[in-house]
Image (tube, rainbow, N blue to C red; front, top):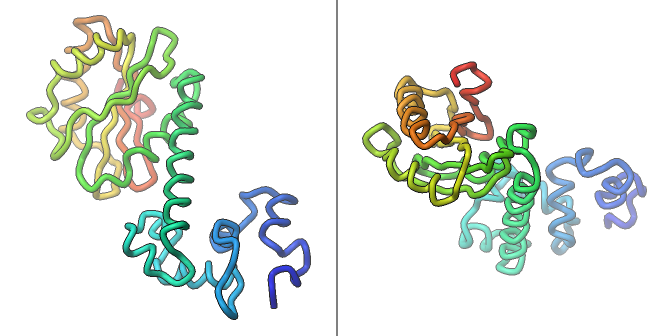
Length: 224
């Protein structure tokens, strides 16, 4: 049965307009993105099969071009459309933070950092440089590889802070293992960076560790 023959309240588009996007299942959201199904299958049927094939919605969204395009009902047009949608989401979060106060919107800040950093396959150390009203000036990826006191250079972070004329900074790095729990080395590194930045009157407001969709905030733990 075609989706148009379904009761109106069960059709993904009508359901979203009536109840909001949060009321839809992963398959229903994906069906709206797909727009059409294949021979003998509705868009919802195809969406369900794709979720089973890839294992999850996130896995499908993270699939590389070749893997994505070889799946039934998908192709390069859908792939470029999806990548554009994901990038718009990241830019939306960045603009939302840039207009507001990063400290007054910690949830938005954490969502932004998760969107930016959770899918890195290696550790990345980054800094959110803020002005004197704690608005975002720049998000800079600084160091790559195993993050420790030897690989993170305080001088470069201080130099970038001065370049941006920043008044404060939020440190961030990811754990590719997906477990966001900070190590003692993370705490030692944070203390070292606090001391270095204090010499140029730049405050470290937080250090956020990004895991697989989760974050741990040093400030919320009372470590700052």
